[in-house]
Image 1 (cartoon, rainbow, N blue to C red):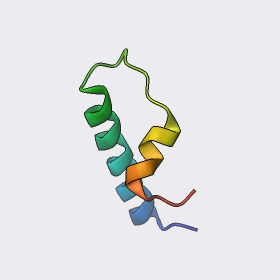
Image 2: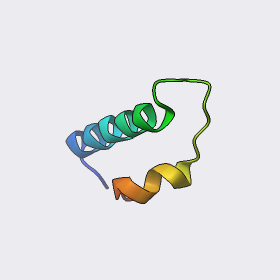
Image 3: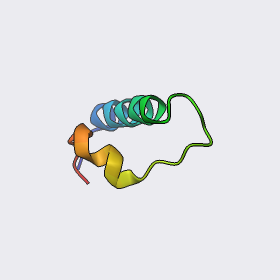
Image 4: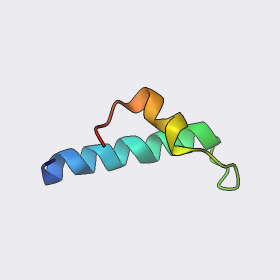
Length: 43
């Protein structure tokens, strides 16, 4: 199980990847699989 500090790091990485992938447009969809490719975050 991840520590609270690790979970915070994962959340930050996911949010940054979402923003970068959608180019700041909240109406563009992105799949979880597309994000998982580059992040290397354990399930």
